[in-house]
Length: 313
Image 1 (cartoon, rainbow, N blue to C red):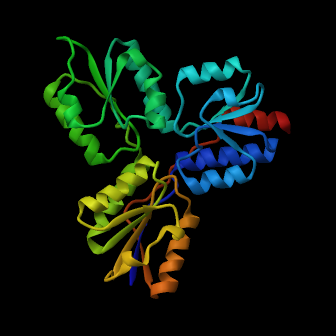
Image 2: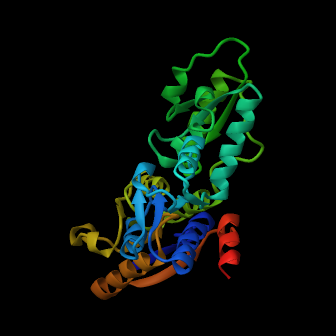
């Protein structure tokens, strides 16, 4: 068996920053730290922090007054920030800067009188946070069919934004339909789908023809990880989204000579290596790591955390 290990894979700069942020909080302030939503959408990561005493919540009323609270990498709405202030919570914002970019675009377009069409997945944490910036001025669409149902007054100022973790093809199909129906629709000068999402998808598209099977490391609620699995399936290959080695099924590998392995932007490298170890130990697999694009992006820790660290020292 041959393993085709895709690079880039795994943690992006935003995920690295959010995880480093929570690690540093634990070092500096100990236990009793709360996080609104999962810090990133990955079971392994969340379980690791839970074991260290971090509490993940979906309702800020569960957080004791005056506690330390981190906002997850996916961002939050102004209403959540106001709720946190009302409870005197000490907050640190671990939102990915690329998600913050979309929030700022939503605020600007709404302020300038545009109605915003947000391309994304209903119920995703990032979408909820973005829509909360201007709820009266944003309509969510998921598909070209959703675009067909849109109705706006003649002469309405329209703009579109996208969730950062969409499939490039998925977003492009919706954008094409938007531009057909509303030729005057505007958009930011730089696309919203993040570099890491694009690069991981590009790697799967470039390499999938060499593989009989695709394994994507990532959790089921990770949007960007699901997109990687779907690219493999659309290429006609069996593709599975798994949290780790424990989910592998021997039947998947019957008649399989080559396995492509990749990981979503919130999946740690340790789970990738466990799967590779399994394939090498079980099937005597050899491995080729193939780099399709280079990545050199980093984000600094949030300013609030750096101030708290300075004060503590």
